[in-house]
Length: 501
Image 1 (cartoon, rainbow, N blue to C red):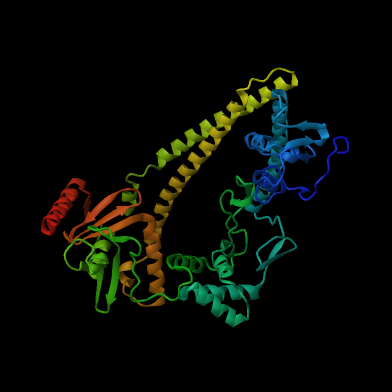
Image 2 (cartoon, rainbow, N blue to C red):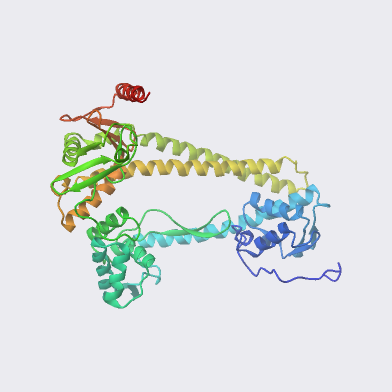
């Protein structure tokens, strides 16, 4: 510093935040704070940034590392690499200096990746041990501890957790948590109760996770691989666990008790065919109705209040579901095999690009080592290849979600088979309410929407896979005749328009 007549400002000093995934350059990192102050003009142009070595500037992928490097230089900051005794600044940066920096970034990233791969292998080894029933860590849920390589259950804590589950069957989350705290003199927060009720470790399941970093370098945990069943001792009955999940997902956050008489198994699924508005289920004792809410205020377009008896809708729908093989119907328009083939193609294309990128980087290293001139287009090629990999990753993620949705529909169909919904549709018991909740949740995975055609007395059912059926008064579901239906509605709209003119 004395040689260049410089004074060191230590108000920003990074003692060791990870540079592998760019965390140090994110909003929480010291380098990120430095960049922020540079852009605001709080740090003068011509200032020097002291870096121990290139590793400390960035060990991220070469494109992101290069961006940090060039952003600093173009902002007027001079970068000092102490172990190289080298100063980089935008005015005097030649092509050889830039290539040297890229090679250093690539070397740093490769070294970090090697260490990460080693850690991943250790993680995989532990996961395999878990599958074989071995306990690999003493870090376990609060109701367990490890002694002599054996799980020990805290029965007092488990009794309390079971109480919370039972309370949650008939009460909202807020009410159940409040009663739990009153019973045991605890201060369990609502979000803690919510997490506990959804914790699958209670039924013995362990979901392996790995640490990842997002684009800002923030550490996040992601599920990795399939869950490991029966790793932990099962302390909550699985049926009770699943019932509580159904109850929770069907309620609005912090809601109270269900209305036993009015719970609608078509909740969030049923609409008016004419206006597209929501339909309200009203139960007035001996009579129940499905009413178009828009028609109640004259906004539907059809004259008068539009309603249909609940028993009629239920009977027609249940006759439809009992009379056909929904499993076969769900297979229509299902392109699972096509999606799998597309996934395979995307993975192959991504691997080809990755191999090209690796070969290209090796070529650049070799040229630098042999003192050859690096063409200026090489950086653009590297950027294009890495962007292509990012694009393929995004497409692969979309296809995986599409495949998961198809699998979810089939799983829900089989879950519906165990519910005799016709027998409990008007039952006011707690058990019946819970089963109606479960039925509604599973139905949402199979059906996209149900529309009531008040004018023609028809139910239109659109399944999540795009298959359509319409259910007539005393018939089973027919194939969807789109032209016929559209013509029917066109004539209705034309008739209404003539009356209003």
